[in-house]
Length: 87
Image 1: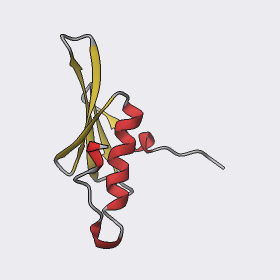
Image 2: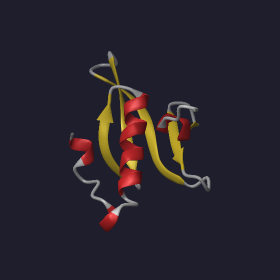
Image 3: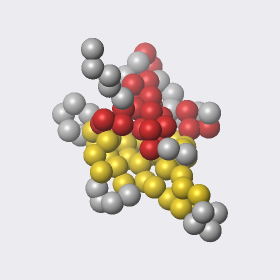
Image 4: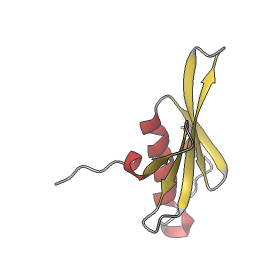
């Protein structure tokens, strides 16, 4: 069995940004890399449907957050995303 991870849905470009694509090639989220603390630390901004849902310390975690929001949006009642980025 092949292992799959949400980061495999991420397409880089332009440099420092990734677009999360669904099965039809539509963008459902994005990640941007940012330097903080006078450029000493790196964070990844996770955006789902135009809304910032959180900040992560790795690209992997940012992709997981966005994909989690995407999956929950397909559940009963559309799934809440507002509190996902605050976890």
